Length: 259
Image 1 (cartoon, rainbow, N blue to C red):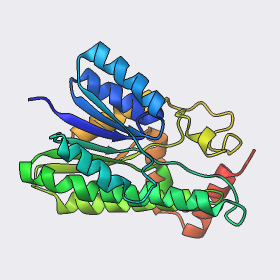
Image 2 (spheres, one colour; image 1 turned 120 degrees about the horizontal axis):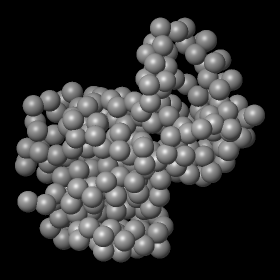
Image 3 (cartoon, rainbow, N blue to C red; image 1 turned 180 degrees about the horizontal axis):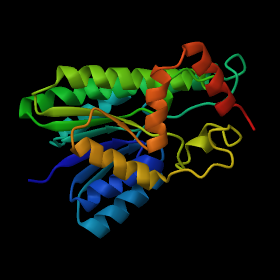
């Protein structure tokens, strides 16, 4: 029996690469993103190459009731979602007192509220079927405060802690939750965040979105709760626990500030 994956933020970067991986593994897809044209191109490409069914939904998940309306649309069409991939999200780079509140409010609505609401809606049917996998895309940003990225780092800390908590609640249910924690990657994120000059990205050789997606997919299929991409990132996540928080914040500031 064919499975179905719902992927948010599927029009580019890690989300698009995850869509390709699921298609290669013969899963049908529900793809959600703001860019209708890009989604349509991806839909046609994947259906043609892999012979799967792809439903595209053009929607801004930061909008009120977007998650509920997507859930109701999918349910009305009789689509059972076996994999929920909460990938949509964005960041913003700059000193907090200078950054734009409207953008930050949308960031919180998308990175936190939409992710939580979609999980709330799609989890009960998975539990009824006693099978399902959820991937929430967090970040290595989740492990420490982030000067110049104050709101973004905080939203990703929420994603990590939320994912770990419900993963524990769901033990033995047949449903797993994975928090994927990539470090900086060549996914287009830095352009949207106006962060090309940040020390996290400038003059760095970064892993590709495809590499991160493949790592995340494999971790999810193994039922891992926290999946940190890259050996260096895993070491940093461990070392942060042993370092005084004031020092951590100072070091992160040096890493993230504009170069």
